[in-house]
Image 1 (cartoon, rainbow, N blue to C red):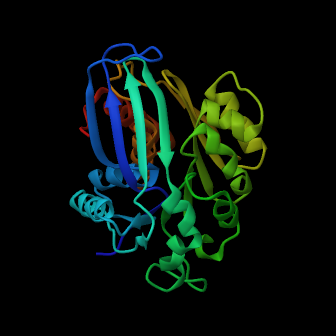
Image 2 (image 1 turned 180 degrees about the vertical axis):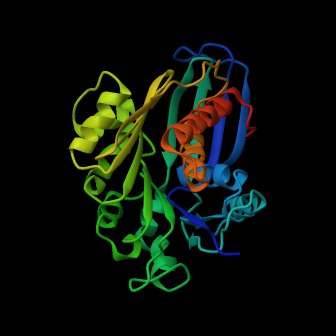
Image 3 (image 1 turned 45 degrees about the vertical axis):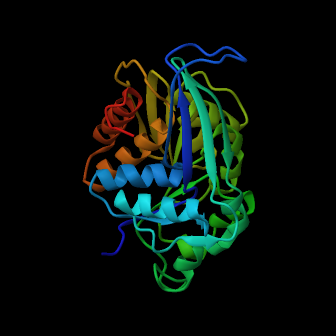
Length: 295
């Protein structure tokens, strides 16, 4: 069966250490350590598959045993892995430490993805998923773990000229990589308030101000989250929609933004309006951070 959405970016092993106790610098506390398929593109794809969509991964995975295990795990989760680029580099990894208050620190090792560069887009070029004359015309999620030069080329790439592009920065440090995409027509950005500030080069007091400012800078559509504070969806020429996230006691934070993105896309593809889609996305993120959605 052909995919109905593409997830382009990081596919790796997540190793997450969580403790219910506060973690001051240098602390050694009991907790749990889990490993699971991760990376922004992969996390979004997993959530989309749970929502009934058929996502295909475009990324780089090593030819090592870790890569074989990762591909098998992704397939078990309902993801299309046939278009992955296999790399001679070690499979990428992500490691995070969380306590009761949230993320303490994380390191993303995505050298295989960065080294692969444009090779991950070959299925969009060689006819498997499209070509320059008949490009992919469905939705595509693009994550900020891609190399900066590759990300910049996406702005006017004929391979994605007809795509409904949904862009996620991956982290505040990588938000600047999205600047070349700001003026691309039909592109939706999913950001938290810190990422929006970095992308715009200024500090915003709330999500609504941030979303409006980025549409004024050329973005077609921007969704901005702000933790437990109101979230905003601004669309150029179509005003602003705001919603409050459900109050929760978080058990984890890694992947919450990805759950938000996937739920929002799935809701809109299912015909939901802006307000309903925003509510569903916030509820999905809340369910994720409480552990209600599972790993």
